[in-house]
Image: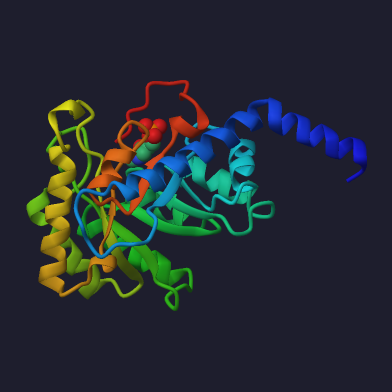
Length: 265
Ligand SMILES: *Cc1c(COP(=O)(O)O)cnc(C)c1O
C-alpha cells in the first residue's frame, strides 16, 4: 500500500462508519470485562465470556471491519444470509468462527452445514433436528471433527419463541450425547423475555437457564466449563455476564439498529 492509500485508510477508519464500528466493539469488549469483574455468582469460570457479534441484515464489509480488530466469533440468524456471507468472507476472514443462532428447519440443514468456518449451532431444539444435523455432518465427511451444538431453551415459555421447555433440557442433551456422535454438546442457550424490568432484580429467565445448567452438570457429571451458557443480547449482556453467561450475542450495539422489526426468535 502506498503512503497516500495508507493515509486514506487511516482517515476513513478513524472518521467514517469504520471508526464507529471500531469504537463500538472496543466499548462492548470493555463492558464484557467489567461485567465479569462484577460477577455476582462466584464460580470456577475465569475465562472471559465469548462475544459473538451478530451481523444479521448488516453487510459483509461491516463484519470485515470488526474482524480486522481481532474479533473472531460472528452470529447469524438466517441460513441464506450466513451461506452468502460465509462464502464472501472466506478468503478475507480465514479465522472467522460462525455461530448459527436462528431457528433451523430440516430443509435448510445441508445449506447451513456447507458454510465454510461454521463453528457452532446454538439453537438445537428437537431430537429431529439434532438427528438431521448429525446425519448431514457425517455425510459431508466431517465425522472426525464433531460440530459444536447448544440446546435452545424457551425459558420465558413464550409461544413465539423456540426452544425446549426447561424441564426437557436433559432429555435432549442425553439424546445428543448418546445418539449423535457427529455432534459435540457444549452448552445451552436462551433468549428470554424482552420485557423484564432490570430495576426489579435478576432476569428470571436467565436464572432459569442457570438452573438448567446445574441440572445438566449433575445428570451428566460435567464440570462448570463443560456446559456453556449463551444468554445476553445488546440490552442485557452485562447483566447476563454478571449472572454467569459465558457467551453473549450482541448485534445492534455494535452494528447499529437493524432496518426492520426483527422477530428475533
Ligand atoms: C438478533 C439476535 C441477537 C442480537 O440482538 P441485539 O439486540 O441486536 O444485540 C442475539 N441473539 C439472537 C438469537 C438474535 O436473534
